[in-house]
Image (cartoon, rainbow, N blue to C red; front, top):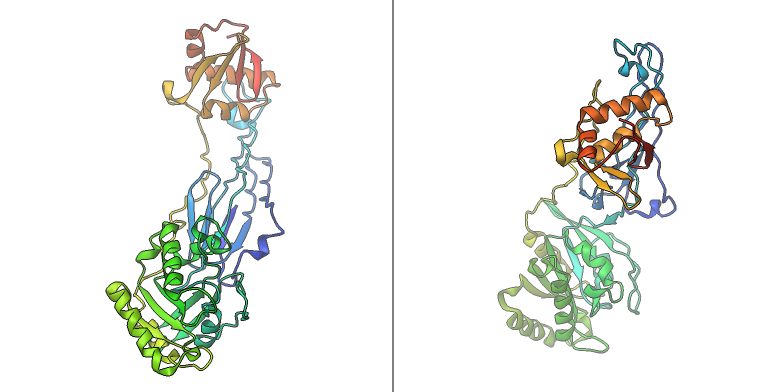
Length: 388
């Protein structure tokens, strides 16, 4: 099962109704010692910015179109009966079974690949500002939480561009799961700088308290968001007297000092200050490359060798436990896979397995644990009497 980063994808919505994916089975072996064809890989297309964990727990981060990462490996095919031919057993009547492929639930998480994150309390004017700065068309209204999902827009400059994300839903307690903010704070982790919007003329509340609330939530998120370069933007300047705008701005400059890049005052309604803001974003944006992907070094598919010997590494490869009913259990992935591959109901296959247990030292380990011929032995899901 392979995740593929696809430039045409923008979100994970297409996967909502497809919860189960199954790769194609491999083909059976054929005559003339020909092995069966491998099954085709199942590809799951995801947008750039997708993070996931593989079945074995490895982390994956897909950020560039075309990147591929294996999240679940298929099983290995079994050898045919020719593999077990010897001078005394020239026509074996048993063969190996293939092993099961990996399978489990995996969680996909999308973190937007944006250069700039627009943050601020609801109704600070983020959606309105984004629509004026870029060609984005977010929903705009006078009530809180108009934006229920992040919206992207792009500022074009002469020599560079900047992708801006409107990060919705930041309220007090967002980092602890309150409201919608916890879900969207992760998107800010991708950004190289923040544009923090503060409403100059809120219907209720104090602008300074609003600013501190958002700063607290960024810090509480725990991903270093509070250390990102920050440009503070005082919005809705058209709602206060023109003579007071610069006075208010200077108060914020004195209050924040060198802790921010600058403080600007704008109005999305009239367009005042927007051109300066656009220029400052492009000028202040750090030349920071997108995070590198952990998927680039993802392990490639392993091809099975012509002859494979299962040899647990001494006492470290397997161990024996005495169970309450007097039987013995042999534990160890190598030994368990050996039995998974063979039909223990086939006498010839069972004789082969007994011989392998002698060769790799399992019988000696059983004997040291008190085993006697005829005792029950359990390996994986198999239970049988062993008379060696």
